[in-house]
Amino acid sequence: MIGSFPTTRHRRLRQSPGVRKLVAETALINSDLILPVFIREDDDATQNVPYPGFYHYAIYELKELSEKASALGISALMLFPIISSDKKDPFGLESTNPNNLLIRALNVLKSYDLPLGIWADVALDPYTTHGHDGIIIDNKIDNDTTINKLIDLTLLLAKHGVDAICPSDMMDGRVSHLRSALDANGFQDTLIVSYTAKYASCFYGPFRNLLGVRALEGPSDKKTYQMDYANVKEALHEAAFDVQEGADMLIVKPGLPYLDVITKMANMYSTPVLGYQVSGEYVMVKSAAKEGYLDEKLAFLEMCMAFKRAGARAIITYAAIEIAEWLTSHNE
Ligand code: PBG
Image 1 (cartoon, rainbow, N blue to C red):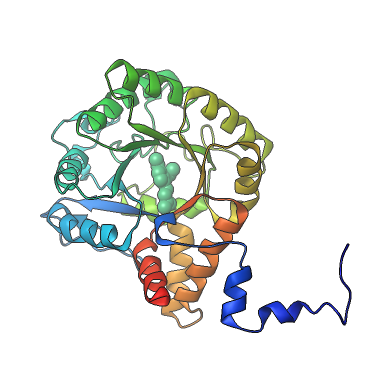
Image 2 (image 1 turned 90 degrees about the vertical axis):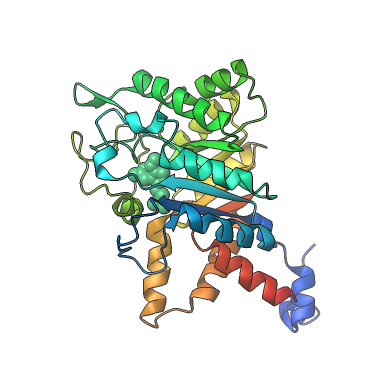
């Protein structure tokens, strides 16, 4: 039974903020947000960030940042280290140095004991000279050799108290191997937040530049391991494997151009699906706002609500602090 005009008027439910809020089908709250954080060496202050809105944090700046994020009710920080080029090699050896930048940052953040998840991306690209996420053998990213290295990195992170590891490498079978390694070493409670459907995307450009990856060496793109953006059934197949292998949450990445993937995955699986608004998406809004073409506050709020409407349980976004501040002031 549907109504008809003039007894039914859609605009009746749109006439005031109060009634609009009452009938809103979707809500966006601060705990829906996860903030990716770039960590730099303390003495690396001269490094310019060539994109509007991006920051990288020295370890001594993490106290203020994490207290702010926690006070705002953001759910977690997701850490990415910016490794200096002299510490990179083809095998990503620095990733398992127990005194590396990521572990030092993790130790400091965990010592504050805030009600804030401390998550870490797990892949080799911050540490490799060629910029790929895995180890190259015969000009190919070798699946199983890479997984072995990721197991070592995962166990190191778990030992230092990380709340969630986020494998972003797209190797086959890594979730089951990482889960088994964690469980065998007493880390049953460490979450695996898997990049389930990670597409080979141009929108990662700013991120790669920030990490110091100038051009990929060996294979010139990541298409042999990241997904083809023509596909969605493949994403659901990936999700089936990740759920089966023990992933606690599933990430779809990039975000806004992939809302169809989020919707389909969220409809099919009860495992929470997270959307990642990646660096290129963030910079599009920031640069347009800088030129005066867009109101960034309105743009980010609308985009984040769209993620939620599509079925995302939460959103990983570089704008998390700004959005949380806007939401907080709006609700006061
Ligand atoms: C790599 C990784 C990438 C991002 C997160 N983890 C880049 C890539 O796959 O090349 C991109 C994030 C962003 O663009 O914001 N392991």
